[in-house]
Length: 92
Image (cartoon, rainbow, N blue to C red; front, side):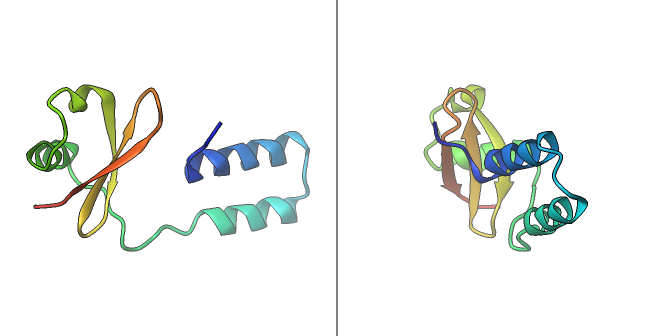
């Protein structure tokens, strides 16, 4: 089974907590996984879906995909069932 980076990070955290790892290991894990990418941002999901629908997302896509984040040139969405990521050009 494939996991997204965020899901893999959550699984690692859960393993660390369940195995009662030391505080130092936990601190290193948090530092490693809590640095956000400065080029990514969250915009109003309605605008992101409008852009995606104009750029090729199927009309029923808004019922199957979740808005995740945006880069300066793309919007990223995740399928609710398959967890597949898709991206569409950003206009606004």
